Picture 1: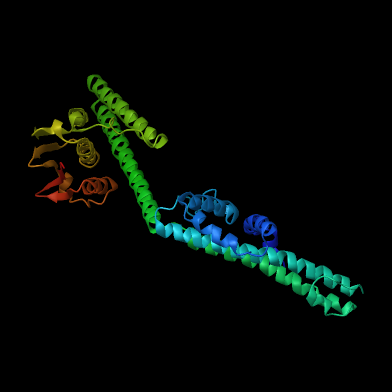
Picture 2 (picture 1 turned 90 degrees about the vertical axis):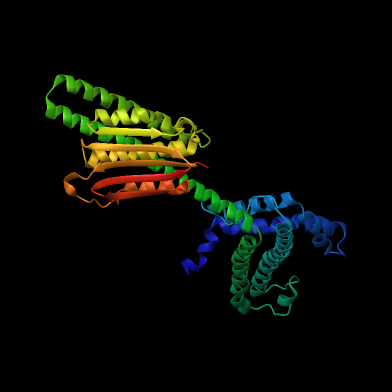
Length: 387
């Protein structure tokens, strides 16, 4: 029984009822002017419903009054944008007519059924009734009390049932159009891509800095040479400063959605990256050919990150080994290759998150990347289209 009566404790039940009563203000004014033509308000809604801004107003009302618990974050299923075309306008008009019809129904039942309850109560007490014509057919008798629950149950069904019905109709007629659904899907996709990009940025930048710091600290402790230790500390300091700059930039992107990305490092800054790897003990043989400085910003930035992750993997998994780096711009393609001998002849799995990030970066730019063993070496080879 308590579960059956629970909807009477919900505020949504009464805000939906209020939403249905609002159109009755307009109808009441019209009936006061001309009660002989009650159908005129439905005709007057036709030009009103074709106004694009009306859809936004009705959507806001529906969101706040039909599903108030969903307006703070949960998707209520109502569009709050103006009509984008004639399909949306006709759906808005149909909604207004349905709201008017259900509003009349709700108003009549919520007034008529309580009146029947009062008349039955009077009849049960032995009084004559001059109200509802149905009750007037009954003789005043105590047995009329047995009929009192019937209009109350009907009133409960009308209040709760019509509220659920008007909400379902609103979601159907005021729901997002296919165009709006596609735009929302694209927006969510962009947000996911941005989150993945930021995750890769943090992984590549901070991972590289920590790898350099660990390698340098271990080498300095093993060498026991004050001069080497000084160089190692300088390399750690420089790499740490660069990582802090990257971290601040990424956090800035999180704070400000429209913050430009022009501060991200590009292939023009590759010398700093290569020098950091050399100081960490890797014997880097680098060769750059072609107009690298003319590579477009997005391609150059992603190329830098691919090169950074490849060098980080060398330092992390192979240590102080010869590394061959080739960067070439030719025939509309940026080609990046990093090769190093496999440590102890191991083949490696190539399944790390950093290598997956390299392949994802290349794929997002319409290019490709290969990572894995090749003729006794570990190879990272990426090709990115310049246009």
